Image 1 (cartoon, rainbow, N blue to C red):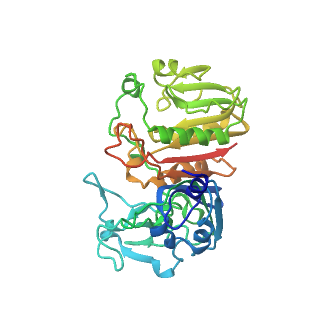
Image 2 (image 1 turned 180 degrees about the vertical axis):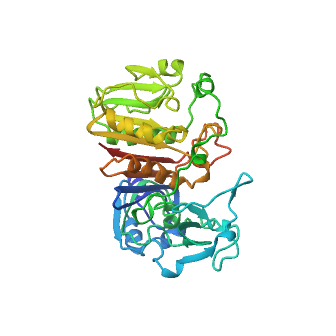
Image 3 (image 1 turned 90 degrees about the horizontal axis):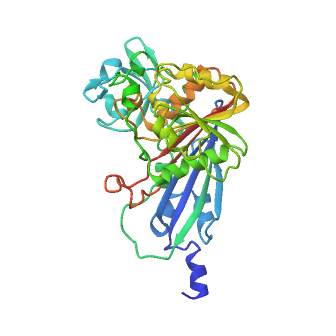
Length: 410
């Protein structure tokens, strides 16, 4: 390849295939929120006309690493809010079920539109998220508007790589904005009110036998693929500081803390001694079942940060744990939780699999609110990366495990 051709292949042209990283950002009274979606084979010829004009114009002719940004007023990036999308429907028309078990609708929650029968404008078996916002007698008041219909949204597209022009003129169009905005906003409380998430049943599990027995088996395996693990490491690296004293809560043999962070002192708290002993970055650890005893065995204001990876869904006393974390953090200390869409089904709380993935962000956000964390509560999602071909689940799932994060500081 001559020099001119090499330069040409690194710039976006009408027939380029690009890896584009789309990022939407917005703020509300709870904090700052970021949704990232990767499109690793975005076909310029086929798909660029589907983008908003400021973004499309900013991509053409640009090199790898270029970022194009634009701010969209409420109703420009997602459909405008419409009063007609607030509907009162008979409660008897709700037929929600999960695993052949009837669901009880709760105010503030989202449900697929297909769980509401015979409603004008809604399709049976539809997946459009519909929010239950109020009960009026025997009726449910629902909101079909996009949850960010009233919000200004900042969008950035970064060109991660540009492949040489190809001859792909067919195939399915990539509705990048539609995919990017499918889910974001569902983590936010309706008009600042607490969502009716928790009751006794919500925190029950299929297997209520001893956690100590369940976690006694040594599992030195990765529970997420390497792309997701790297994303989690990047999140922690961006929020932790060199020299921090960090507690890894509900820890195992891998803490996902980047080796680029110097002088971090890492303490682990988990259930399996062999797994904790195998962790190469821990300076010490404690064995404790938080579902039996949520009182953390540390002095107040001990840690600069607490991290919790792919484990918050197992807490049956989450509010007690969040209060304890607040106690042991130094002023300004951060509590950072990350998770994905994979878990031990018998040990996760019953509510977790009922929820949309972005609602799970909302549940964790509400744990902070209900335990009186007074500073901003921020969220992040990252989706769309390809699963590595050598991953054992490659044949079953095309995309890498999504990553979700929620954090706040004391």
